[in-house]
Image: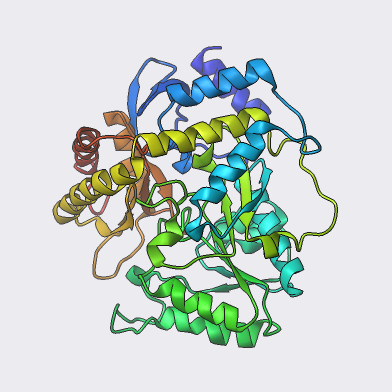
Amino acid sequence: MTKAEILLAAKEHLFPAVIHYYDEPLVLDHAKDQYVWDADGNQYLDFFGGIVTVSVGHGNDKVRAAVHAQVDKLMHVSTLFATEPQVALAKTIAEKTPGQALSQAFFTNSGTEANETAINLARMHTGSSDIIALRHSYHGRTDAGRGMTGQSIWRGPLPTASGYTHIHPGYCYRCPFGLEYPSCELRCAHDAKEAIETTTSGHVAALIAEPILGSGGFITPPKEYFKIVVDIVKQHGGIFISDEVQTGWGRTGKWFGIENWGVTPEVMTFAKGLGNGLPIGATIAKPEVAKSLNYLTLSTFGGNPVTNAAAKAVIDFVEEENLLANCETVGAHLREKLLELQAKYPLIGDVRGMGLMQALELVEDRKSKAYAPKQTAKVMDAARREGLLIGKGGQHGNVLRISPPMNVSKADVDEFARLLDRAFAQVPVGG
């Protein structure tokens, strides 16, 4: 199909709700490592990685080899049968969890399913139905996923599943109390106590939270935030579910994002980067929590031998190539480059994130912090013209999200910064 035929077919045969970046959708044709090529043969440096999903590079040779070998051996059975790829992956994940305390897993197809599984576990384990989630969060597109999600743009107009209360995240750049860190004494975190005692039964099942709020614009809470909130939740009978769909598997410089806050959850969920592009979801829990799910369950495609083999290869590659250290060192270099751009362009109000998960919040002026969604779109368009792909997020669509493959180099970051600099130069502050 030609590019025109692809775009026409997409318009005629896909749901109109399926969004594309850019006024003229970008038709991608093939990819390798940190680069993608469109249908016209143009090359782009990919610094978004399919929404924080291409963790070890497009077409990673080790992952491809694992996929090919497994396809030739066994492509599919359901969870009704035991397979080596499934238990090998479960064992590997268990060995990586903080303190090796989480040891029993259930595999699904997506982060949404993983999160719903975690919620069911928490409700069965505690006997409560009240779930605490964060404002600006994103946890999936099903009724339950939208119920957990703390952004109206992703919740939509339809009714969501019930039982969710949303508390303040540690969004220091836009503190809802008008305070400044650290003199604020973490008012946002302590507010969770009043929220629980006034908007729930008082006995909650769980807090589900992304360590860094992904679609919300990579909002990164202060170091004390989760210790305070998790303690409050546990005082009210709940457990902690860490949604590691975007922060997991090394991206922040540690295996799991929550490790940066020194808190050990009872349940963790994964997807995206675990499969490097193959559809996978996983929920892992402490044994005493896992056994609470005492009704029959299965997954037709969860635990698929091919995706499990790929995920095991991803983890092995991260470990063999020491990508946790790469995320830390190259991530620090990336942060320096972003701060240099902030000093140069008044559009950039805030720089935040960890490791190779960084964001720029764009504002019309730094004093008022007025959202700048139009300028954000223009920067993205200009970056595309320069041969650079980046992402977008935030409730108001004014945050640039940057999440390249975790095996990029400092030279890749330098090229990224050069191209993004050229893109910002094309967008005036009032533009």
